[in-house]
Length: 83
Image (tube, rainbow, N blue to C red):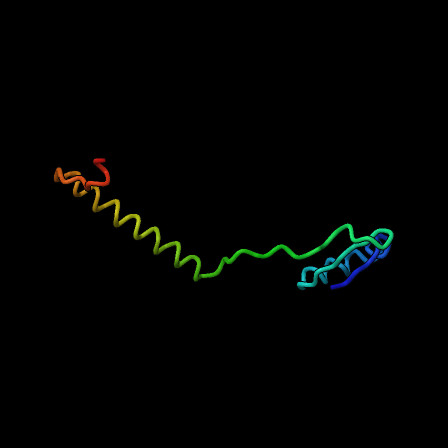
């Protein structure tokens, strides 16, 4: 972890941002005291695995809804809906 003072931070902003984006944590100090900690924001998972999991959950919800509607049409509402 890099410790730098405010003046160095101002002078080297672009380089520091690049280092933080690369995963480095940086502490900015004023008069020798830490005042700010910089760290990259974690990126959310946006891959095909997440899309597949979401699609599977939606499929399960659609299937459950269809079963409930079918039972309701037959006058057989599930107990958890009637109570």
